[in-house]
Every structure is written in structure tokens, then in C-alpha cells.
Image (cartoon, rainbow, N blue to C red; front, side, top):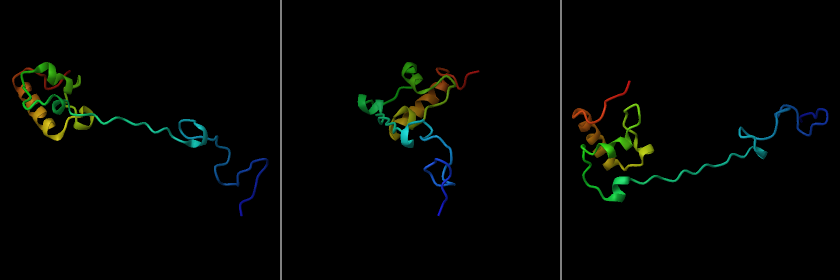
Length: 103
């Protein structure tokens, strides 16, 4: 059986003098659960069948400053439209409508 030390009500060897709470400092060490709403595919909502590579304004929403193509989990597009979006961005890059990368 573990021995008791001083005025502490905790047995020796089980956390010692650590403050109560978790990384967030909350009571009892409970973490707050952050719920992120699932993003919906913009192209499915608008019922677009063709993603035009000449529509630069729309394509730039899916490219950050560095010039990379945003992944599905961030952009919220479905698999079908992500493939079409990828092809449209690559065509726009070849046609010099979008940059391949920035400095």
C-alpha cells in the first residue's frame, strides 16, 4: 500500500505536486471538444458540371499564396470535382493564367 506524505491526500508516486487540470488549465483535466462542421462541395451545391480553366477568379479560391492546390479536406470539394478542379488548375497554369509557384 502507498504511504501518505504530509498534508497531501494523494498517495505517493501518483502525480505528486502537479496542479490540477489538463493542458488547457481547466478543472478536472477535461478538454473542450471542438466540433468543425463538415464542408460541402461548392460545385455540387451550384450543380456545376464543367469547371472552366479560363475562370481564373473561381480557381484562385482553391490556390493559396504559395500556388499549391488545396486538398479536399480543406477545400471541402468532393472527389469527382477535386479531380476536375485539379485538371482545370493545371490547364490554367500551362496557359499562363495562373502561376506555378510564387517567389
